[in-house]
Image (tube, rainbow, N blue to C red; front, side):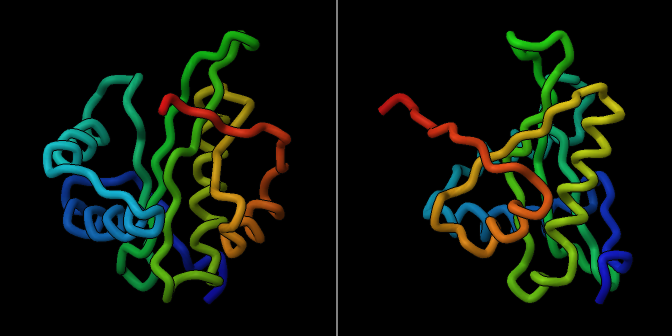
Length: 150
């Protein structure tokens, strides 16, 4: 399949079951999980109207939802414009290598452009070699290291 066969669209109410399965697999990849309350709250926020909430996109191949991304445009102290944070990106293993990840990232780039956010950024684990091959083609590696509260 080529990149043009991938359809990327906003997450819709009808996608909840597919979205849950994809997000569960994504969280498992990162050896993490969330409570049912977080699933419900997160999905409801995607469908809400609050501009500060995350947005969700899904990718389809042959009518099946095979990938997802979550992103947020937010203020930044070093810019007048908002920036865009791509938090989650996942494609089913059988859909990888078919342009799903690239199509999702490009859709976030387009959404950021529409929102007037000239910068899109994301993080991944340094050993996520498969994803990083794509990221090296569509993004620029920065020297930043993430810290967080213990």
